[in-house]
Image: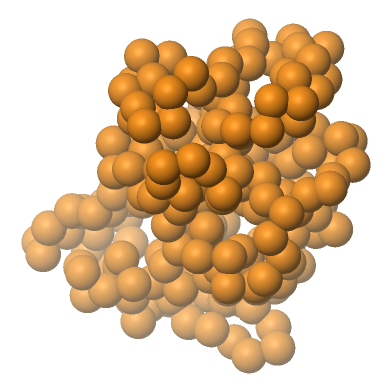
Length: 227
């Protein structure tokens, strides 16, 4: 049973979401003190975090930043705010997806299931290491290492890199990446993929590898390999 931490201050909405998720065998926890979200997160050690933006004390962006600094647990935002800036901000902070309120519960379940499959199942695949332009990509530890150092990637970032490395020097079209990463492109904006790829490229720049992820305008991306 997956443990879900629902950081939501609307008592009625919290109760409704908890009841619905419980029907799908998720073990749902709430926050008793919104000044101690970090402490409660550490105590619960959830497999997934659902978080609202507008919260008492500090907003959801703050707590996303705090949680991401200590954990790679998948994070989904639930918010009535529909401005693109909020969606982009959530992805830049390391969130895995953004669900706008009011939402159809089937959509929420689909997104939760897609994220959990992606995060907790793909590491069972047999290929754990990959050599790429003098660097070692470790798909189990979510790291890329070369002589310049080592970086850690989020689940989304390592998954995107894996998809590109499986077809080195070939263009992977955007729709293929979206379908692979989010299972159903109806549930994600095209801009979300762009944000994740840009974030991946920025991290790879620390190892002087960012330029090997090439954007093909109107098509997709490719991972150049000179090894």
